[in-house]
Length: 371
Image 1 (tube, rainbow, N blue to C red):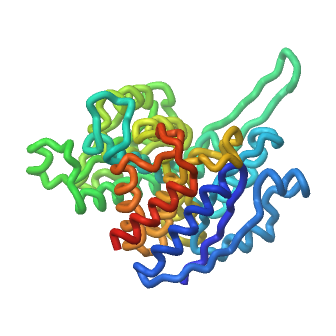
Image 2 (image 1 turned 90 degrees about the vertical axis):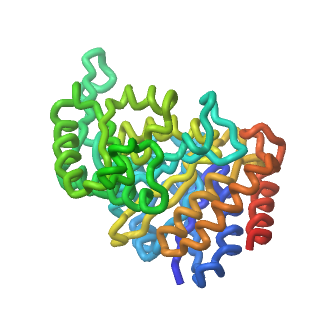
């Protein structure tokens, strides 16, 4: 049995989480696993009523879980940053979720804004460092609110923190390459026995201290993976190449800040935020990992029943992979592929008129039919 902490959260979070839990129940039998679901009332409504964001007692209870399924955090009545720092960053840091994993995969039947590119060209994974960089919160104000105000925010990077995320990226590229070697390799690369590619994205020409550490660590770690080809892009060049030549990427490893930016670009390539899933991973499993759609709480459509549940369902698939239930994860992805390839039902973000529950039901029907 695996214990899953469920945080429905704010806005459309409860709507997409409902569909995710229904699909989880359908596939649980495939791997012979049962799931104990524990709900946690966290988010904007609780904060506004009680002033509590994430009590220590709740953190202790969440720590007992094998994984966490999160809907969304963000409330129009709460100032930006309070919930994000108090819940998302707090859990990522306290539970040592040092890898933010963002698959960028275009499904057949889904349009991408990149002309001439299809599912074969858009299939990469971004490995974003998740516990360091500017998100540590080192810094402060001097003379705040005056004409002489100074604001400082410092990027923190440690050798241990950088190395562990880079090594994770190489292991992931090796895992992907064994299943399906990266198509962008040359004949010379294949002759060397190389099966995958890791591209480091940073800004070594300007950030000459922090990203020098990244570059040296990347070079040293790569020596342990002769079967994986390496490349380097400045972050601005990466943004251009993701649009022009997404097929040149297999696994990208990058900093917390740059990863935050380029993964949203990746979401657009794969059809939009409604299809973008993520995992905040503690690879050592010393604390629970957390899985969430990246679209946020979307307060403008909350309560209308039109949020796209696909990202939440793909997040459930990532959760299942993490708790060693690969058959269920594969079944969800296959069912989603079936529904998207059929062209309907689709929520408004994909040009359709379907409701959240209709898309969820279609995926569940595809699951049953495929089974």
